[in-house]
Image 1 (cartoon, helix red, strand yellow):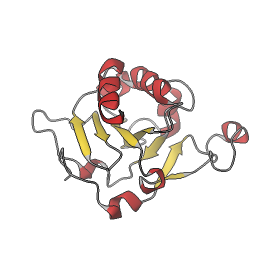
Image 2: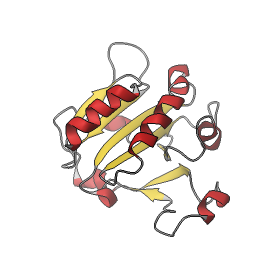
Image 3: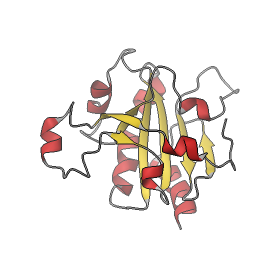
Image 4: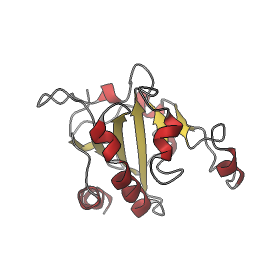
Length: 171
């Protein structure tokens, strides 16, 4: 796993992940207003080289992840117009009980972009597990523009804490 101070490998940066929310397949009305570039259906870190990343990891069955949706939306809105910062939500265990679309509709519509981490949870497995308790969610990971892991937080962050981390690695 990648610990704080480790750099994400080129192979992992190049991996493509499917957006499950928003996507043109699930949200045609949303995509009608987008240009082709904005309506991407896949994500890779390599496609956004040089940016700062805040990665939120959640599981649909875990109450603390669900309760963090409004705060996550606010964090995303704070940074949505900053081209140097990319906030992505990786969702695990889709369908247990909520679908990706249901999860996305629990907060502000169409934000933040959500990626299905798949049944094998590949991105979640890139990072260490939380040995302090039984749950591995929520997790918030900050990666700087050089693809170095700067922080791994085993909690849902408040907007103030998230802004503190992003400002610390962005400036």
